[in-house]
Length: 85
Image (tube, rainbow, N blue to C red; front, top):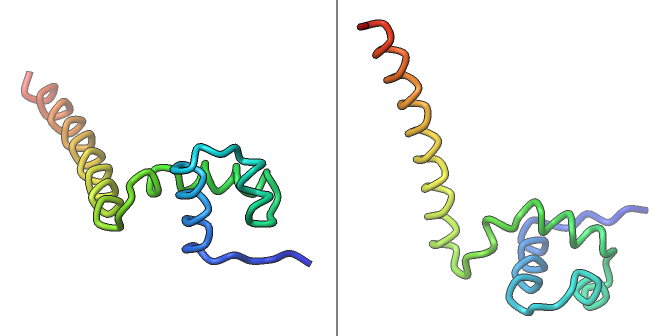
């Protein structure tokens, strides 16, 4: 039977992994979950969890979104610049 963990629990495990300096194996043992599960969650949530407060995580997500928008607009500018020439 597989166990489903909620997103907050997963993020807490990742935060503990990042902040404690422990290995994935040590964290897995501590939480009684598989090492591969910890590794997968770290890959999935590392960017969000590298910041300690929810406000910082929200800011990081907003920065990523704005950077993506900038790239899209730069492509549009390049396209229209070609049309003008």
